Length: 224
Image: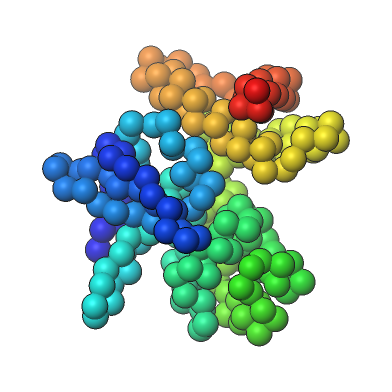
């Protein structure tokens, strides 16, 4: 089972509704399908780390990759549900961030699940019945427990990130571009965090004003 890859991006690809990349690891090129939102974040990167799940069939094998371990782990939960295959699980993760998807399932929000392309009422009800109890521990240990001094919406202080998101929505910005900006800020901030820790200094969680201003800069830079 290949569960983690680190290497140079050789190529990116799009096949119908599927997106992915080829990553070179020790001279071997691995073709990996990834989330569309992830490929938007790594298009300009030379090297990438992916958490992967290997799908092995009698006549083929494929790799599904994620920038966040949380997404990979939730993907593995989703495909255990009867009727939810690889592409449907990916569609669910494309429609909602992992923490939001766990919240919808654990709160038995069938009405929210059926808004995802390809998810009918029957599949939505199966997701709720089969996973709502299994995801209670998942949501507590994987989504809500943050390392001390961590950054980003996957690592940023969740309350600050939500406040910034709400403020930007009120200013007329789209939810997708705000989330993209938060992820990009997190990525750059994590590099600074690693250097801070290596230097033996105490890491700092960004305050509202800092995160708000930096998110605005990222959004406005990309829309020029």
